[in-house]
Image (tube, rainbow, N blue to C red; front, side, top):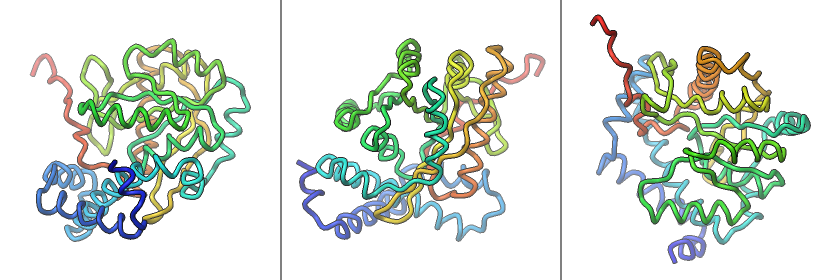
Length: 285
């Protein structure tokens, strides 16, 4: 029902409503505004306060536009995806897939990340994505249905190891978002904007086991109607499966994410509590 209403509205009007909602959420209700402002200040201490406020306004607007676009996507179909998405570096993905070992995509919550990963099957690339379930069950089921509508296979963050290997053996694309906070028993600590961030080593482990190339891809919002999939050359696999090698690779992947965010600070979700899990203090402290 909601998607039909949004789809029936002129794009300009629905986007204006989204921006209004973003202003309410970010500036009036201030949803996680303090967390976002603190994270941005620690990551970019040199940014003037006025610029920091502009970045946060654009972040909230991006999140609201994301929601409207995903509602519009249900009726818009593959034509909408193709018209709304452009590529930068598509040859890196094609070259990696030509190796025949599948492709591991390194990504993060930038731009309209949902639109980006959903677009891949519609644009001719068989793909799966490894994701955590959203706590809101109804919203989670809706997003899963939408992903599958476009041919995207959804794998759970836990217990999907064999399914991931099978997907790579079929020369499919397997997407990972690597900018989420993990618990100590799930992750390893690597540096992210100068602070230890608990990060899953799952991508590095799959790269080491399968030998599949890891291609960075980040979604970028160009404007209120267009998006760009930014792809970079494949990264080398870990030298072996040791803990040190997997941590080293995870640090490399995290640095790639940081580099993109530094170039596009308004495209990332600063409301996410990325540094929530902290290292244990030294035993002799």
